[in-house]
Image 1 (cartoon, helix red, strand yellow):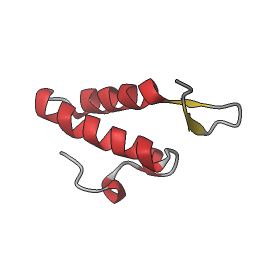
Image 2 (cartoon, helix red, strand yellow):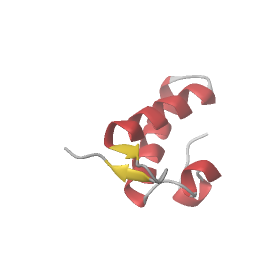
Image 3 (cartoon, helix red, strand yellow):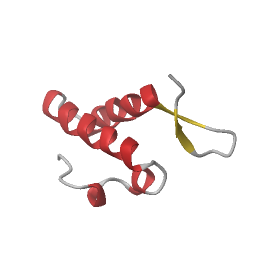
Length: 67
């Protein structure tokens, strides 16, 4: 099931990721959901896409990685 908007994303994503990271998650999930049958796999792909650009800081907040 692809996501049409950020409001449809899982709470863990909506409530914790910055806007740009949510965009990455949504696009990666939607793309992966076309390739893989299991929704769980699409979520893993989406989280990995986010983790390429973002990381948790010492306060447990998601922040953009330094290039």
